[in-house]
Image (cartoon, rainbow, N blue to C red):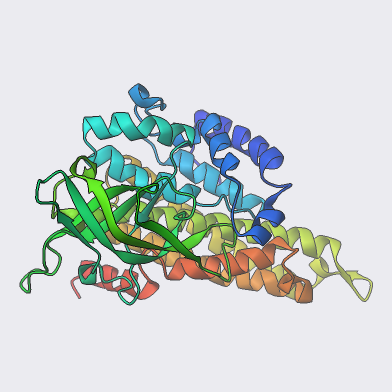
Length: 385
């Protein structure tokens, strides 16, 4: 089916991105996976490309383009070569909306120019050991000093993507004791300079997939955070966090489509070249039927994601819409990638083949940004159930 979601500017950007990835990423991705991190220089090159500044207003060095579709282009092109760009998506998809919507003018002037160039990389720290998705159970605390000039931050976080290379971390913490009547109250977001005394990067977590996307534990021991680095209003963090879930879940759905489409491409190329008993694997009826099933599912997912992108850019994508896109996108990606790996036979289990990396990388998408079970709950509630 002909896609209509992208215009000429998006397609010109696609060509630029494709050339960039071929030169700056494809030759090095396997080494990055082994090292468990991308080089910091990659982020500066993405800054030079203009990617980090697409949505940032021009007065801070960005392009001021109010569209999420450019991020979809990068997601598709990155999946096309079976790569992961470290914590890039966290920087642009997760953190940027908080800075654009809730930062003060002074904070934007201080942080956004470096954000655009990649000189200031960001992360967000919500999850804590033992709390999982239950943000109301956060125990990390921040208490105001007696003179009111700073907060004193104490606690720990886990599963923090990009936390090992970040310069600025948005830390969700409790600035007032929990209220039994409203456990969500009393949470705030502090923007913490990672050079601060008492800020500690702990273990780099050893994941089965997304190997070059560094994921770490963080700890805070009497970290002094100036009151000027409070993001938004004190005690309003829970509302801020839920506000951004639509974008985050759409981003995951985009990734589901991109990886599923890439898996079909990888499988088509493999079965066309591979022979069994002197016969190309592509000639077997089972191969044709499996790839036909996968192509149909990917086309359906493409239509859903494209519609969601249009709705998001026009301000009409609802939380239930985003939940449907994430649920369908990640479940389709899991099915399609599994089938495409099967067509590779034993070679599909070897990490030298991109299908194996897609298989490992995709599993977590049904967990983060809200599990598939949480998505079903949101959808059912929207149905009045």
